[in-house]
Length: 403
Image (cartoon, one colour):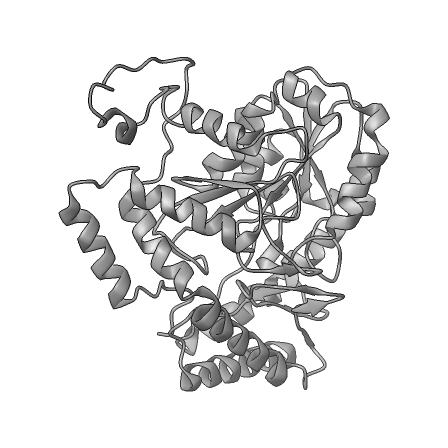
């Protein structure tokens, strides 16, 4: 069976983890701090905080910005549940909007229709690694400053809706000459096992707030907030006579460990020269083979100075039903090829339908989901396996279309 997205862990990554294990320092320490600086240099943002997940990063920024009950956060209906769950955790209301029919990304026009005086955050999602239309989204945040009512120091300092990119998929993507991570006020990456760049689990909060914000101070404040509200971390307390500490708030526990960071450092080192080119090769191979078929709607990989980081290959089949899509998937699995669907939209999930949300309110999302099949994209996929995947997909689609 050809798997869908196994991690590729190099010998060097294994060796670096062993070094950390033998060093006597395995929790948050020098490797994590170095990894944060390397990510900042790579993305071109102002400061980066590494945590145990992207989900923790999304929630901690919402809480830092003061999002609470009565507030609204605009996000795409086409996303993973984490994007919405963190809003619920804060007591705020997720306001789902529809997506662009070409890119799967949040529609700026739909955002504009959803903005109210209660909107505190817009949370675009870079679906599959393709950056959203940030020029249009940031312009909307500026356009509706007059509606925004700040209730915290941070909100009043920004003076508008916060734009926080859920960049879980988009490490290494380009947007008009800039890297993902430097495109909005803040971006949050995922380093989960299936992501292009993995630390097994983990996430990164790329801070990029405009003046007069001090991003290094925000970083320091978030370090406290994500370590129980403790004003010194374990590394700081190892200095002679520096053992005393204080708890300055009821914080959270979501720090990254040096074990995880060691993997990330090696993965970042090989990211541009090895990982991205291979993923690009796979996606372009699929597009070349599938574009010959009238039923294939291949994903946008590059457009108007925007380039994906090739995290997913979301193929859509024209004119099929959800039942036909599911039958095609079963046929592909019968060829010993693993595929997936990204995503079952959040408004379709029972927790959210019980709150009154309905997928029928987001017709572009509904249509795309019902016709979408994600093909395998991973570093160790061989040419022979790529050809097997392509043949399995073509044979399976054509069999179901004939039936």
